[in-house]
Length: 327
Image 1 (tube, rainbow, N blue to C red):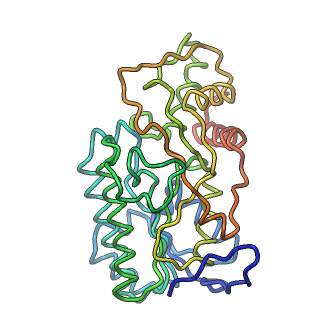
Image 2 (tube, rainbow, N blue to C red; image 1 turned 30 degrees about the vertical axis):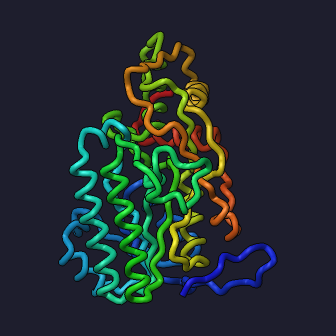
């Protein structure tokens, strides 16, 4: 069932997702799910959704019943409990158990309902803390994980193994993708639970508005991180649904990284903050570097379109509009 990755000289591979396919996007209100839903709709597919108020994806019985009734052509599993270093460190039980329950419920339910195609979305934090850089997919399970998000990473690793197990045991066309750090419209800007980029946008915006002379940030600023706009991720997801049918997970990233210090400088510029930045080195840095090897995805013809500074500016404008905040 594995389809070789097409290179530039290979013949065209027919799409594995029929035109006008009905696709259930689990987690359609989140950062990733909303972007995937927009992209699928733009390409002429029918998107099926259920909000948390109508369907708790942790409930295996109700989820399976819904999928039997809806009978989608494909499922994109973008639903997850996510958060930054602080949230992961504070609530490891919830990050482990809630994600395991969602994954077990949706993937098993999709198979029981006869759904032929499924894309599970993991995270780049599945890789060892000191993995080779850029990180190839083969680095999975070759070393210790970053302790600050170990529980979340283990849940996502379990999701990869679950999709692989369904492929091997039942021959279904289930695949997985591992995105890098994502940002864009729909992001979480809560300072207690957000990821680094939206947290920086909000911190610098509020510091400028209040006239704060300095902003204190966690760590040394030296770790390097890769960022991908969520609309680029959505394009990659649709491409994978159309073209990829392999057993191994596929990294999804921009192929470039920068230091957190450089990122902070870029965000300060976008938000017009001109004060000082102090680094609290008593706080954890996390993984020293996390850049994905995206050669497998590039072989399918994918390349990101949204430059980081442009994407940060657009995300900042979106947040201001949502909050009704003043520039």
